[in-house]
Image (cartoon, rainbow, N blue to C red; front, side, top):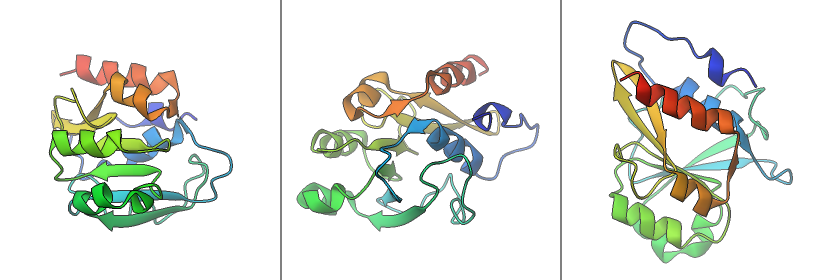
Length: 166
């Protein structure tokens, strides 16, 4: 549980946001019936996280088995069954309004994360961005509430702390 708060503050540029994403996921209370989490990358290849983000199982994320799937937003908008298999939607090049349409159609608890939603006013619950050569994140409380994902309040406090350091 200390993982997120032990993230080193480095003076050099971070290459990937892998540890940040793993830290955030470790503070989510996932349904205990899940034996695997499906991390669905939407509309492209991630730029902020590496291809190896989940290669080594984490002791902090339960369940530790995480599978990465690639989809297009148009596919998920037209096929509810495919979207329902994703516990995490990671938007790469998806416009905010398309994110919101997709999120509004979800019938299950799904954590949403975006690489291109710096304002974080609509769309994803977690919005990644870079500041001072480091990866940071904002939380959209309305989207988080809509998702019904239970996230430890420490993540919310850390998000506010990051924003205050800019």
